[in-house]
Image (cartoon, rainbow over all chains, first blue to last red; front, top):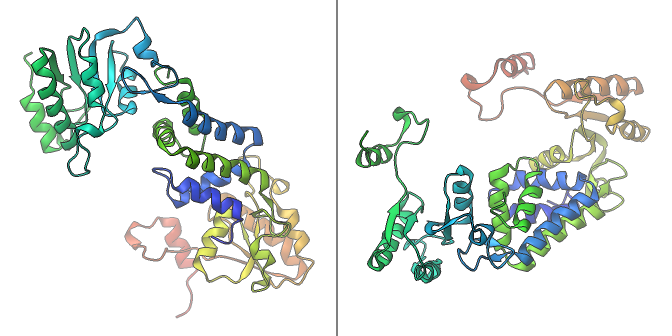
Length: 198
Length: 198
């Protein structure tokens, strides 16, 4: 892209390496950034460098935090006897937004995937097992409802059940507002299998 | 989002201010950035600050550049008698990618829009007029094919024609590979109006 200046080309190239940002979006973002007031650009750039420098894993649940413990693990308001296992911090955020879960979390940072070469040692399973020595009533497995998530759930169940701790899996079925007509067969089948008494 | 660390929340907030990046994408980008090697984050952040600090308007055509003149205006290979007027540098880039245009450009940085309160003085029209003193054969108006672009084209035509310089407008019609069945009425009508002899 020699018709752009070197600086713009460099910025576009850097931006287009980010996930979900193609060549066109990178171009649009670059021009937007060049048009921003200088202090806004500095504050965006600074936020990146700061987040990278300061953020680490929570000592308990392995989510991202800038303290020893994340706000949830540090909270006395949460029920530490319930541990919900999720694949990544975005899933944790999704459940937090429901406002209905009062337990704590454990973030695996991935799921077991023989296809992708991700084994049990590549995700934060050891850290989960280490937490179970303490007073834990239930491990709720909220990994994704796909092959990797299901494999991971089965693996966790096998490890945790022998310790005498209850293991559960979030329900699979028709989503709220879902129109049966447009739902795939696997989901419909799972909704039937998982039917509950009325 | 108190369940994230302050640094991550701040980064998410900054990212979600960018155009086309919603709350979910900002979250995904933030986690991606935190996972990048430190020098990559620094180089992305640096590219932003550098581009903002160094980039300015080309003295001739008003596109972004980090020199006095952009590579196109500085080039002896281009035909400086043809000036294509575009709304923004992305449109310039789009035409450059065709590889078929050998003239130079003029970037307006906007279009006349009474609705948005953008008048002729708010875009780089004065700079265009200043260039027409020199040896110019044709002004090719390649503003967008919408109300604002058409208004701007008409305005430019009215200003430039009295100087005895040819003014043309890029063709409107059915796009390459376009299936007539799926093309809107205005485009079909314009394609008919603009029909050429075979």
